[in-house]
Image (cartoon, rainbow, N blue to C red; front, side, top):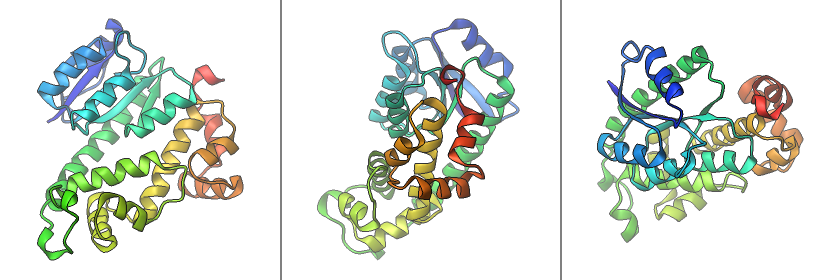
Length: 263
């Protein structure tokens, strides 16, 4: 069973999240419920949840601050944001923290259920890949820099993923990221492909498209500004890549997925 933590300061929503979805059928169990970021942090430390459903707007400690603390604790739980926010900065911060899924309020529970199932599949796939990935023999590769030599392959790739997420608006290359984490390019490629099951270029493109989709749905920024914000200085090329990845243009995606607050 995957462990799930529910976080929302509104008791009726929290209750609905617990009751409406068929958690057992989805192979999940709710191991904690919290009405504040502080309470959620305490539960997360004890339970190490696989999946967190979290509201952004909460008193004392908001959802993004909670997720940041979660990452500082070393937990890589998948996060589904319950969001009414439309500000560009909030979208960027959520992406930086590794949040790839969100649903806007008022919650449509059928859509929520579909997203949770997809995330459950992704979590289980990652857990399986991690078992294979951690079996890679380090001694077959070139010696690492002293600091890097003390890190596991998982830690190295987490550093790489974090560096990539923070620099999506810049040109990125394998050599730059490999140098940043202190390993050779060839070793980086081996670890990266085993960890993410795709090439470096495919991963960076995927992350840029996820960031763009989040921003298109949750902000009123122009498509040109969003294009530049995810590393494409030419809007025409951005549109071509986006359409290839999603099957629709950025404008079509925005029209279909825009949150109610931005209409």
